[in-house]
Amino acid sequence: AIDSANSASAYSTGVKTGVNMMGVDLYEQPVRTILEEAETCGKSGGIMSSVPILHATPAAFVTHTNYRKNGHQLADGFRETEPTWAMGTCEGVYQPSAELKQSMINGSLASKYTFLHQDPEVMAENF
Image (tube, rainbow, N blue to C red; front, side, top):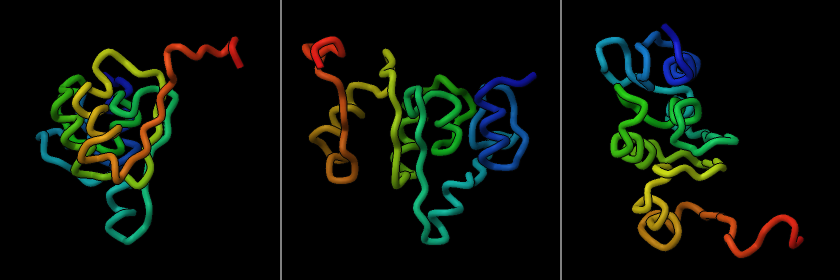
């Protein structure tokens, strides 16, 4: 069977994996993504998506997990990979987590990332 997690993982790593898995092989061992390979060579690497960055398809390029909904493992993988550029939209209930979001706004990740969000008071019809 195939889903967006393992299909994106195969695309980002060139390695077959199981359903709901990202950045790991069938034995759940981490495999390097094309983004990590680029960064190893001194290049920049990033992801841009119309969904949250830790959603299955974009996350397959920046994390390693045996289950697509393992939020802590996804967030830890993102921190370890440190993509040069990460842009996602459509904030979800769990992504980014409140802790990760706060860290990007004014915490330990604030020096690496600029966190943009829409003020709930400002709606499109007010522009």
